[in-house]
Image (cartoon, rainbow, N blue to C red; front, top):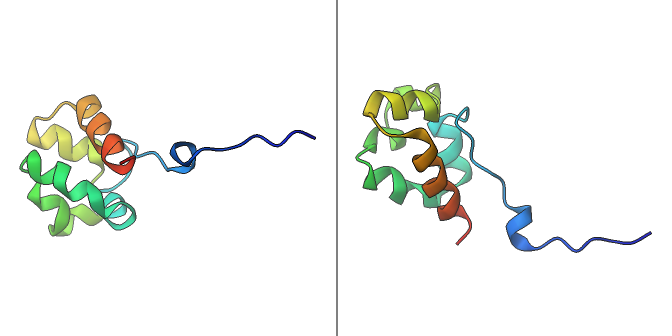
Length: 78
């Protein structure tokens, strides 16, 4: 049996549009800087952050979800 080496980037989890803000901030605190950059301060303290998905929040803030996902996932790979 051949073991495949897994690099650190492959081990990282991926943020998806269906995750809640609470889940993202809890699992990946480094994403806070991305939320702040987009004036999404509610991601880190609003009661809605417990239930609201990233996609719902992006829509409410007029932010393109695919670009936001790209930035968030890049922030956890550093």
